[in-house]
Length: 352
Image 1 (cartoon, rainbow, N blue to C red):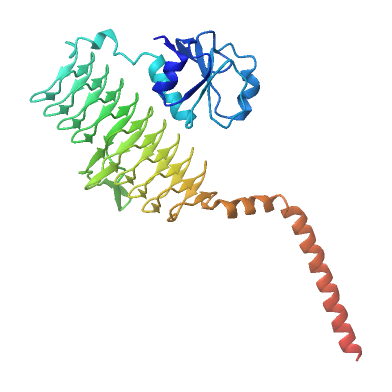
Image 2: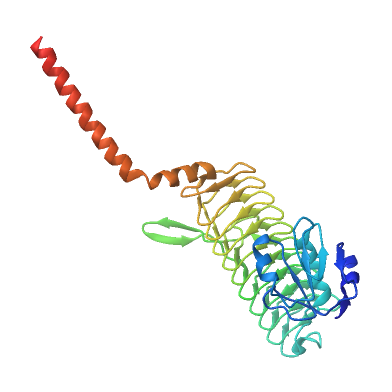
C-alpha cells in the first residue's frame, strides 16, 4: 500500500516536516531502507546511520535533532511506528490451505461450536464440545482439547497444544510449540516412590495475551492457573501450576515461575529469571536478567542478583567484589598490627 507522508502522519497522530507528498510504500530499518521506505530513529545513537540512509522519510520524537528531507514527528514515536507498520504492510493472511475455512484433512469432534469466519488448517484437531470464536485461525497441526474454549480473533499457530477444559479469551496469539494445560509437576514421595498428584484444575488466559514459541503453562492442581489481560510472554518460558500473573506483565525468554506464585500488574521479568514457589511480586516491580527470586518483592522496585535484592544494594555488593583481594590483604595487615600491639601491651604490663 502506497501513501503520502502527510497522509500517513495524520493517520498516526504525527506532524510531517518537509515534503508531505513523498510517496511511501514500505518500512524498513535505517541501514536496510530503500527509496520509498519509511524508517525510524527513536534513539540518538542511531542518528549517525541515518546520514547514509536511502529512506524517503523518517519517524522521530519531537525533541530529537534530525536532519532529513522528510521527518514525521510523533510524541510517542514507538507507538507511531506500530501504527505505520499496520498501514504500510499488508495484514497477515492465512495460507491457502486454510482459506477454505475448515480444511477437509482436519478433524472436528462432536458438538463443536465454530464462530463465523473460523479457519482450521489441515491436520488440526478440535475435540468434542470445544468452542472457537469468530475469525479465529487454528493453523495446521494444532490441537484443541475437549471442552476448551477459544475466543474470537485468535491465532493458534502450527503445533500448538491447548489441552482439555482450558479457557482462552479474545485476540490471543499462541506461537508454535506452545503447550497450554499440561499437568502441573506434583508428586508425593512414600517409601522412596513418587506418586503422581492428579492435576484437576484448568488454565484461564484472558484477552490480548501473546505467547512466544515453546511456552508451557501448566494446569492447576485445583482451581486455575490464571494469565490475565494484556500479558506478553517471550519464547521458552515455563509457568507452573496455580500461578497468577497480573495484567500487562512482560516475561522475557527462558524465565521459569514455580507453582502458586503471584505476580502483580505491569511486572517485568527479564531473561532467565527464576522465581521460586509461593512468593508474591508486587505491581510494577522489575526483576533484572538472571536474577533468582526467593522471597516476596514489594511493588514498584527493581531487584537483581542471587537471591534478588534491591538493585542498588546488589550493585553496591558487586562493586565491592573486585575490591575483596585488596580488602583481605588490608585486613591481614591490620590483624598483624593488632597482634603486635597486644603483645607489646602485655610485655609492658609485665615489666611494670
